[in-house]
Length: 284
Length: 339
Image (cartoon, rainbow over all chains, first blue to last red; front, side):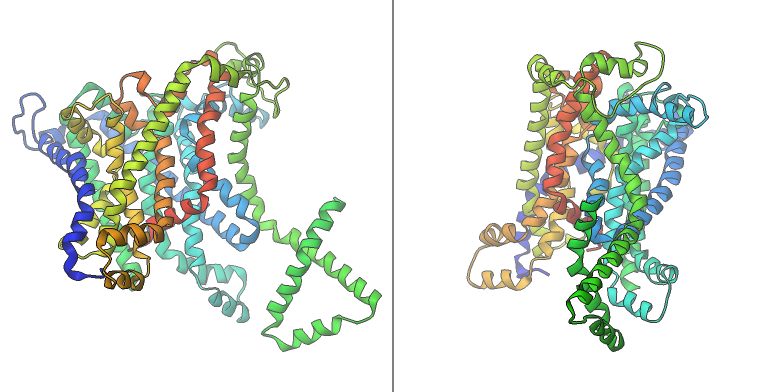
């Protein structure tokens, strides 16, 4: 890969400033956090796994972890399917779809803070969505303070990430050689057959990456949740991120350390799974 | 309607001809038929083109069918923007009247008109002349974003170069480490960042937000991807001519890898301009906050001001987005491809 094998030292020198910063700002302190997760917060005495037990048996943690899992379980399939549908539709008319593509990417650029007031106006009990619900024969609902809050969050996440996933799907779609499609058309395959037999299998490698990246992006939905509903939102949208924040405010470092290590471990496992998927995608 | 017809048919007639040639290229029979259709007689040709145009209009209408559903979804993006912009041009009376129930000042139901009935620039005047705190926060945002991006460029680009072009022990492990760190959400590193910033007495200064941002591994990863795409031969010949590593990096690496640097910068800009968690955790003094934290804290009585400030926050991000949209797409894709 390199153009001079023996110049490894030069490579390390290029890397050094960045690596030093990463060590000081991330790695060493995270090591400290791992150490603290086995200690009592005040005395610093070694307590083994007690902090972890405390976290896992904590009601707020169970609620937040459950909500976070449920949130991901609902919104990721929705997002992935919807973005696939949009990508396939746009891809079939790409020459006319440029504007739509930009449109779907735009929410990535819209600062969450800019839409806070709008979200409040839409999802308030006397807001626009209630107006619509009444027009359709329903009732006014306080969307943010009922079990609907969860769906508001799902909507926000999809609103923000649809374009991101769509771009990834489009990249996957354009990676399927057009000769394959032409050959299938010559053989008389209908659009549905082509989609099932060529497009879907061709997109399988993209699916892995899109799933993992969507998962990681889903942690950022906290911004919307926080800005719209504050520190203590409706219990259906009380996420791990809220819990971290509240523990941080109470300065309960022992619980926070153990929870950080737990979440880091789960995410690490997921990333390793992604790498394996990448490797398998290469073999296939 | 007539104008639209002419526009559609006018611009797509060459496209139609091109398309026909494309299809008939492989099928001899159809080509013959197509040629037979081109009668030399003038009026026959006229009718022929007219028919073609008519067919073409039908084809365009049909061809836009798949875009109907995405078009409806696109309203979810456009309507909020229309709301923000039209709202920011309403006088405070009109706005209060429209949004009173939501703002908690009266009972009833919200209402909205697509365009302001009495358009005014007063919210913007108020924002720019009577809200000194807006300027403070705006400059906080600019400062945090600019310094973070500069730092990422100064530290990240060389690191990416090191990853892309050299072999050294532990490289694979380090790159994996960078990927893992890039994918970790803020909440995981929140405590550790707090500990180190506290130790360096940087809490409640802008550096508490800037420095961890500078050493984010995400831009390094993106730039590495692009640097790896530079053809090896160019660099090898430069090395043979006796150019040093630094010279190759500055005169060839950076210019040739510029699209990657741009991608990383555009993605980082959007991230920095939108920071919420970091300033919220590490900055306790409100006068240090960036815009993204200031906005939600404008009182409900100042809805007009809040909307004008929302638009003012939105504009730089949207401009950067439109300017760097291709870079943004490339960056998203680069981050997803296996190395």
